Image (cartoon, rainbow, N blue to C red; front, side, top):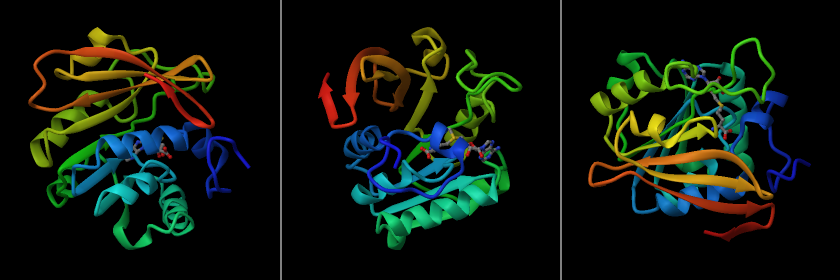
Amino acid sequence: MDPKYSKDIYGDKDAYYMGCPEIVSIHLAERLSEFESAIELCCGAGMICVQLAKKIDEVTGVDIRERRVNNARKNAKLYRVSENTKFLIGDATDEELLKKLSAEVVVLEPDWSSVGSKKDDHVSNIKSTQPRSDRLFKLTKRYITENIIFRAPKTFSKETLRELGTCEIENVHWNDELKFKIAYYFPELEETTEKDIHFDPKGLLEE
Ligand SMILES: C[S@@+](CC[C@H](N)C(=O)[O-])C[C@H]1O[C@@H](n2cnc3c(N)ncnc32)[C@H](O)[C@@H]1O
């Protein structure tokens, strides 16, 4: 069993590798628990969605790869959240699809790997994720909501994340190593801030 998750999840190797560690998804779900509906664009095997669904009434995941969406449905069953989750196969930049979706908050999880490079070689600008983060942002704001959460690679600087709007950045350390960042974009934020948070497989250690 992968220590990232408390259960033997459904997913290919890439889904494991890309997936958000469970304890970080639990933290994210707690932070977003005031919302009643959420969408995750580029949800992969659904490891964030299954935790959001424990705190939020209606959760929808969208991914372009059918196999991942099927695994996300199985993971929802495994985590006993099938009743309030829905998974759709689709392109997160398809405007016709986005027009039909509604939610109070959207989590964006584009792929950060540099194409043709080693998996841990991450892109460092908003135009190089798959799909492009700036496009995802623009479309999400236009069709769904301005409350946007972006899980970004550690290669994205504060200035890069600020290009997408004013945000609150969490630098997520796992076993004392900076792993990735979570940026929270809420319209009411007045300035961009940044802080470190530390996890290990047992949970949130300190902020
Ligand atoms: C970082 S992974 C998501 C991991 C997931 N949040 C988890 O914790 O399990 C990125 C996902 O983006 C998906 N993806 C890439 N391009 C996409 C697009 N245009 N529309 C929807 N999904 C896309 C990939 O199939 C991949 O599953």
